[in-house]
Length: 215
Ligand code: ADP
Ligand code: ZN
Image 1 (cartoon, protein in one colour):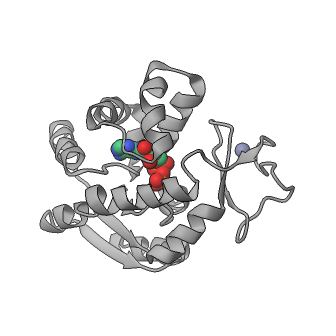
Image 2 (cartoon, rainbow, N blue to C red):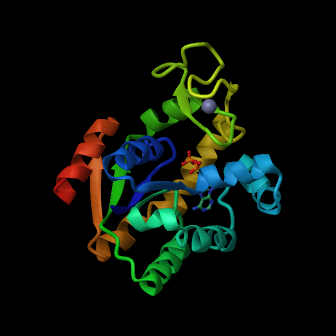
């Protein structure tokens, strides 16, 4: 499947993407995971991106398109991909459209995961992430704690609160989402690709996608 997952930070894009990869071996491509990996590795890309990310601002479109232009050429994308956290601005959506046309790739659908703001805010404040960049498993101290407090079930690394998950940075990320990313729903509606699914359960979102794709 070739799908874009749209939705506010904390809407569950990552969780849904991971569930969908299990259905047919499509890969999850998360620009946030790629960027956090680059920050941890201390690469040039990471150094450029870190300040924006810590503030809860978007990283410049040119950096993101550089990453994605290469990523989509990799072999594992041939089976299909779930774009999680990209595109996030209209210029990124336009650049992606041009790129996909050039590569001869057609998207199946764009899933807009619609979750109320108060639920999102609460989720992000209680979200914790494995600090191992190769893992980045997600936990929630209220709804999905790790077995041992502060330790990742999957890899044993420390589980931490992300630098951009302070209340202030979260509020700023949600504002940025409303201003810059929410308009993408209209963009993909016009393209005839949009499917909005309202609900706070990832199972419901996955069921909606399966139904739409007839699988
Ligand atoms: P969330 O969806 O929880 O906000 P992500 O992991 O998707 O978190 O992104 C974390 C940060 O990485 C964003 O706040 C932003 O700074 C940067 N980022 C990720 N994807 C993009 C993108 N497509 N365009 C610009 N910045 C991005
Ligand atoms: Zn881990």
